[in-house]
Length: 183
Image 1: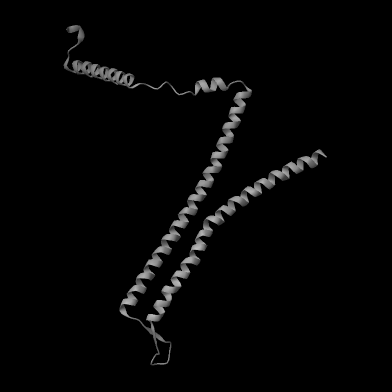
Image 2: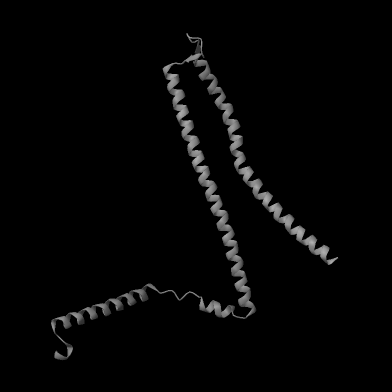
């Protein structure tokens, strides 16, 4: 009976983990689903533009009986080429940044797992220190030293400068052959 209860608790934990994973996957689907919806909306708007371009093009039969040609005004052709260039640039940028985003998401996931492991390790260390009644001593050893006030810092720097100048002065006197006992 106890084994069944343990197994039930274990299965409940696994179900919770699977539900969490499913939620993460659904969030990703929702996140990238926006793009799929956007493509449908954009394609409807683009279809009107394509109809205008098709209306501007005039099919011409080939003299040699091959494939038909299309005659397009110079202004329409320039507009078509400009639109094509923009679309290619946009697609390349989109691919580039989607790859970067995917790479960064992997890095974030990796760092999250590392942080979780680090947090668990800290909990284990804290538990150990608590069990051994060493937590207070550990916190005492790892405390931040008292922060130095600005006046303390100025005084310390001045003392260091005086000591350096005194040493330089003594070194200079020695080089010139002037010793304190001669004075």
